[in-house]
Length: 594
Image (tube, rainbow, N blue to C red):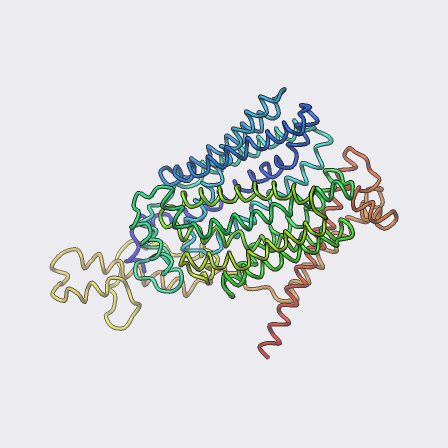
């Protein structure tokens, strides 16, 4: 009620959402260059600078080592200072790193750019996740939205980078990444300042004193942990999170190992080039960006530990299936299964870390990010040894067994931290129309009638001071004004319809898919008439060769148009699969109710 919310919390009710939205946009603009660098840096270092394999390994190790060291420090900075400044500093350093790569003429300059990028990535991602966690008590879907934004930026940058690299070269791609990172820094700096945490806890849903339910219990746990270590260092936070950090290292080791095994397998066994390998990974990235928020609904319904176990089984099935995958098309389909598993696991891990860290979310995210990188490093070393020293089938099954261990380790780690297994459902869409409609009216107002009416925050206070009357001072008049404001807002909320989008019916889903298919067909016919249709090449030429190497266009604008048509085919297929799954779920749900 309005009487319970401090003025600081009601002054700008949409500011936290604007802060989150701009941070999500910044995450999309920076994660694209982040993922693209990991993919093209080894190629650029060898082609442009002539570095040996050992020197390329040192280049990648410099960035990773500095990032591992800097991430816990970035966590401390995110707890001590305004987080958007920390994140914006990281984005600017990312831009400086990309500019350094574009200007580098020797190995020393490349190493320096890698060092700057490692520090920038640490500052950026730890602070971004800490900012996103600020609304976790109000909205349990904040981390799925972050993952969706990151993966959208990732696959868009992949497509743009791979298509344009032949036209603008490595340097042009690096300068485009500079622009994206600077735009992200501007978005972060333009975001609203963080509200006072005490005010947010006092007025936010799920964080109010005495709140009940799973999230209220989590807030209480976090508050006790924070009170027990008021000026906790990294050691205290690390000890608190140790079970989850060990689980993160195990799962990241397995996933990094299978990813690198797959990359080497595609290059060496199927002789795929860089762009073709990127196309194999593309469907999984799109699946992650689309499915993250939708999978959160299943987390709310079935609980975190069950979803983590199911995701581990799905990821293990993917790893085992790779052992017998006959061609890259099947591998791309299996990679979607891995993408869906990660779309469920990563937001759960981040939410659990944020809840268990209490007031020290920055520190928690810092050690969590370091655990991720440590697991990736171990996984990379493991993958190399497995690929060189074991049969491909044995390597895949070994990775699958390690992933299956996560089905036991990760749920136990979640339970050991004492956080809620079932998070609260995310709130409905913001009631912007109601807030605009409810404006305090100036001028004389009738006295509120006594008797039954809407409960207000001032009612308990009035009962606690029965001897007080309007003649005794101004306090009752303030309470009366609060009561009238509360009654006015309640009446407006009842009279003004909330613009909450109802769930779409099966007919609506199919109509949307039909419209998409009609537009796709019209454009494909036009492309066929001018000889730029990838779909026609797929039908009239060797199917596997066209899937892997593209159609007949070699380069230039024609190749860009043909590749765009190819991507649209995959988008339409994904739309059809998603609509079919939704319709099937509606049918099954209806049958269960009957």
